[in-house]
Amino acid sequence: MNPDFNVRSYQTLVGEKTEAVFNDNFWESLDFVVNAVDNIKARLYVDSRCVWYKKALLESGTLGTKANSQMVIPHMTQCYGDSTDPPEESIPMCTLRNFPNQIEHTIEWGRDQFNNIFVDKANDVITFLDDPEKYLKELKENNTVSGQIEALTLINDLINIQQSGTFEACVEFACKKFAENFTNSIKQLLHIFPKDYVDKDGHPFWSGPKRAPDVVDIDTSDEIHIHFISACANLIAFNVGIPQNRDKDDIAKIASKIKLPEFIPKSNVKIEIEEDAKEEEKKQTPEEISTEELETYKSLVEDLKKKASSIKKDSFNPAEFEKDDDTNFHIDFIHATSNLRARNYRIQEGDQLKTKMIAGKIIPAIATTTAMIVGAVGIELYKYVQGFNEIEDYRNAFINLAIPFFVFTEPIEATKQKDIEMDPVMFGPVKAIPENWTIWDTIEVTGSKTIQEFFDWLEAEYKIKTTLLSTGTIAIFNDYLPKKKHAPRLTRKIEDIYAEIGEPLEGRNYIVLEVGACTVEDEIDVIMPKIKYVFA
Image (cartoon, rainbow, N blue to C red; front, side, top):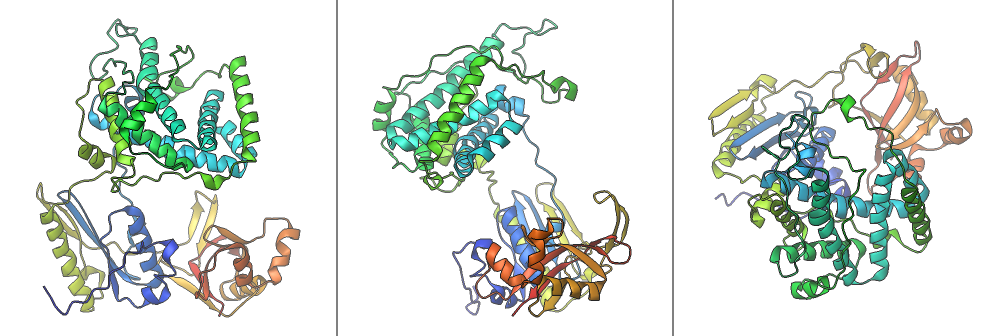
């Protein structure tokens, strides 16, 4: 439309891992930033970069007929990360686990199954192999014995499949997972609550939204059954680095020869019936540990410790969810899982597109909504490039075309940090240094310094005593550690220590530092802006 409009497009992800590409020169060369990204993580990252480099950000987004825009102006307004949206309404866990009555419930359950098996457990294997003792200790602290056995069994299964190196082992895992999810777990639920079960008041238990489920036995001639087995087996193959197999006929032949475990009722299983049960009712009695469970746990731990020395953690790959790749089996697994569970509960099955939209939280974009918010952002853009410099000149937009609803408000002023007489976290007074600083402010220190020289400079300039020096999640100096550990660092250059324990970015001549400190005079805790330490 405009032949004089020049565009330079990048296929590179914008994030911490690409800061060598989108570096200081890139950000500093910009006049302003217009965001058009589709997830919160990307928005927060771009917002943080705009705050650091003092660049205006024109933020906007759409959700069906809803749209909003936000003006983020340096030293004037709040940034995008200063506010958060209210949490989305969630489906009660007892409904997802045992009493679904809508296809949305079964899709959400399938999504949870995907995370649990192919993401969390693959990560658990890696964590276990990295430090078995530490993993077992944390597992024991956060789980019951039965929970520990379940986690260790799946780790053991994944390691055994990886050691076997065969796709047949992946198919066997998938068949057993089918039996566990759609056959035996349903039999267990009906064992506890038979179809004619009545509650303490004599009313039928299976009534209203609670549907009595039916058992689904594996059938290798059923298309959705093989769809599940194929997706599950191929995802496990990806987890353990075994070549995948997309031939469903071949998979069906393998599956037909698998011997499945027989159902044995369990008497110690508890089913959560109401999500809003009182806390005192949720408290469980002390866990009764059987001799058999203890023996199983000890056997698993002993077996896994032997295997840990011969298995490399690099052999395992978590399958991070990606909804837009139709070849990775992610949506295939969730779709098959959802429809099989729908069969258990006689719920109308959905097609794969519906599964993709719900599991991937996709809401169709509407051109009218997009055009509306682009117009709102465009007006603010004209204001900014013309040099409008009062917060009253700008507007944030909140729009819903379905109602219709249009609200334009002044942006919120940047929050100023002030002294606090009683901080609920620190249990005492807190002093803001410098007074009234905002998220847009930074303190710049130029010239290479040792930690002691840096602390002396802070004391001379701001009258503070520093006890903690960090960058991101890395502690460069911690006065609370034994002196023999931290004292030698005081005479070393900050950049030299960071080069040893951090990941310096090539070409960057500064480090972003944060300090923990108190005032010299009365030892009141201090909050300060981030410090840009320029060492070369």
